[in-house]
Length: 386
Image (cartoon, rainbow, N blue to C red; front, side, top):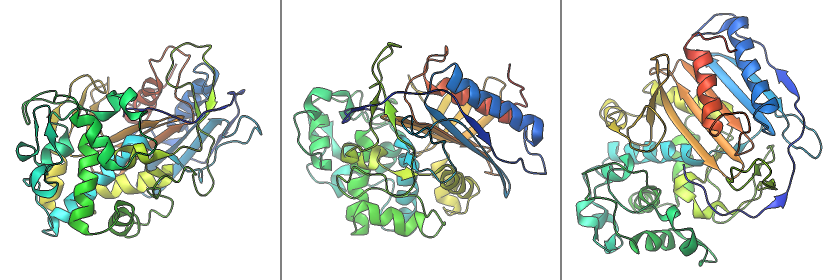
């Protein structure tokens, strides 16, 4: 969940405004009127204390759903956020990518033991990188050691456009973090390489593969990977406001809604809605997207370092142990002006997807992850917020 360059226009977060949907009639964890009231209070607090432009959440308990929001989708018009609003999902794209790879593996088109060198000859080399020692599984669970290209902002800014090959070249100009398989480090380069491998294995553009193998068969009508450098969010959407990840409360706010996301592509370029993300993760966690062998691979985790607190990482998916001891499964993502969390119970029957259309917090949280953790606690720990 790393973030870099945007094309800013000035925007300004406004005052709070809240609406809420109806609660389902049968309770799940912390559901019912009292549980959802606690969630709604946290949404309001994210706007009034956290200073965020707007926040939305959709909770799923079985086939029932509850939607809540606070703040604004557009600080210029005062429009509120709605269930139909699309937003950039950042690194939650990685879960879609891993699901695509595992479906291709189930079809026999590739193997997780295949090396990067087999699929991309001569691409992973230089400064002690060796694609013959990195397999697809290592790319998916971030144990490859390959340098994270988004850590070299200066090099990225030298490119006018950002085809995948240029992103990998940036990474190859640095030494690896560790020998393949000997550690863990979050590297967006892993998923650029994964996207390149998918295109070769499937013989189609990555955006088409995601649509054909995931979005269409599982009814995700509002989810897509933009083609090329298309900067727009098609369909209804909130504005995306950013402080360029500056921590100064007085930092100027920019509108990053129109954004060439080609730099993030397979890493974090996708667009979706809260409803689609809940639908996707319910199907994924519930074993309806992958056969049993691939499901086992996806949810076999390794320890993480310097990432989300109390997290473990599988193949494009993570588990997070909440302060109350409950463990939830899903993924988080951040891109300029948009932070999202989609986590649920292991079988997928209870899901919470949250998005904020700003990338800062003034309320004592380190960043929106603190807000998201509070929401997950309110849902899964039967906690009433204070």
